[in-house]
Length: 419
Image 1 (cartoon, rainbow, N blue to C red):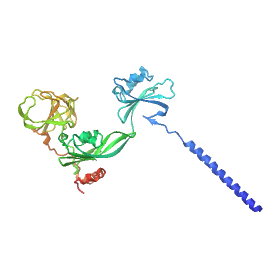
Image 2 (image 1 turned 90 degrees about the horizontal axis):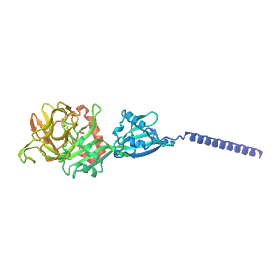
Image 3 (image 1 turned 180 degrees about the horizontal axis):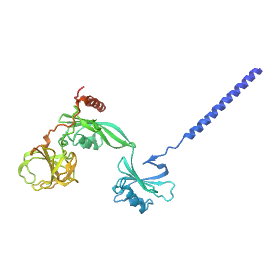
Image 4 (image 1 turned 30 degrees about the horizontal axis):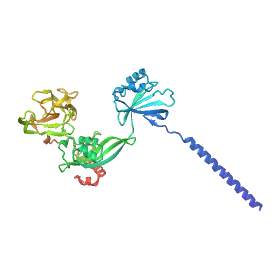
């Protein structure tokens, strides 16, 4: 009996000891966990904004930086110093009405004086101006995420409207026209023409802020497929190629301005809308709003700029090589840096649509000369430049097939490429 009581006592003591150890371990664990719980600061614009009252607003019409900062206790001397410092990063003279800005005031500041002014340059970039102690400024960017999306649709009235109908951002219409600027004349697209596009969308803080690259596309005009695949080929520069590895880039752009409409075609006998005289019209008239930028269709040298006394108004003439010369007439004005002898590059703005000379309204009269003879710009068929080399085709085709899988089986089935 005594032995049993002794054994019971020993077991009880052991249990109490073990329980005490576990309790002590739990306390140690809890204390350790508590000590590791460190508050994560809320960093925005490179600043811990937990310490500040953040005021968000928008620059008003005719509102100056001084007007804004005076409201938040910043004096004129500081504002002048900020303006001088801003030339090193982003000049405050570039601030524009309607753009967002942010004022940071220390939470423990009893006189509510601004310590930082932040200006949103665009949806991704911003400029920070420190207003106290040592005046300084710097630029920053909001981290972005890139996601892919695919859309398809058909043309009923315009490419812009078709993009809206397909649920895409309207800016994708401009991006797509840039991709095909060498190979498709967007002035000639017709109802029932269709498209399919696989492209990137850019997000910042879960908000869509823009369109990235078009990765794969097919634009069907007149029942003809026009494929475009984005591929980084040599020099680490992404370009667009078709299903056969031919570059979409050409020596000339298809048109010298963003698509609008053709008001008059190349003709050997056209009744002039002003003089009513029937005579050749060896160019293409592009109707567009006054001030629309006009681009050089290719690299070349300006060999003429001025006023055409025969009715062409302000004009620019560009020699591209020993064979081709282009002429742009009825311009409202000329772009900076355009003078006789100036070198221009493909896509560079050379002037702006106007109605100078003999003209019924704003338009561009665009002409192409081959060995001195006018030819129809819409029928030019220039060869591609820099195609994919034969030895690089397997890698290219592999990349293309990966893109096509992202667009859909129906799109893959339309592709006629080597296996």
